[in-house]
Length: 124
Image (cartoon, rainbow, N blue to C red; front, top):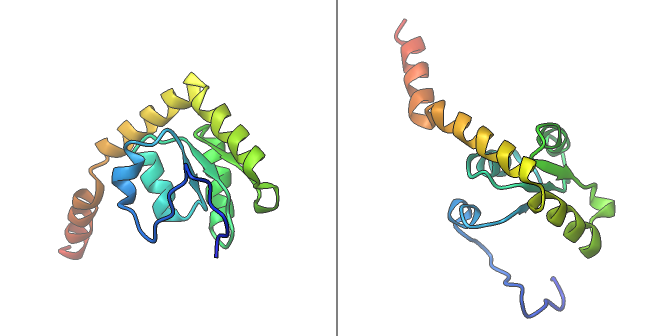
């Protein structure tokens, strides 16, 4: 239960995340592997608020790449989230790094190339 939600906030049980990220100015994420990859692929700056397991390392890596702010869960409140988002979207260097990483990922070939590489190894 979320309690009272401001009028300018929509709560959904599911959204088409890639479609949303392609239009988003920023992405507040728990920094799971899938969401982190999607944020990078769509060149969306991220505020990473990890909660478990690999998410802490992912958040640190995203921050070290200069495309995210790692915000510990215990510090995540409206003011700190707002500050982190604004710092990211107001920094042209963050946008440039996001674009550069997104382009590099696209050149790698994605799932089709990965499948081709696996099939090539299996046929040896």
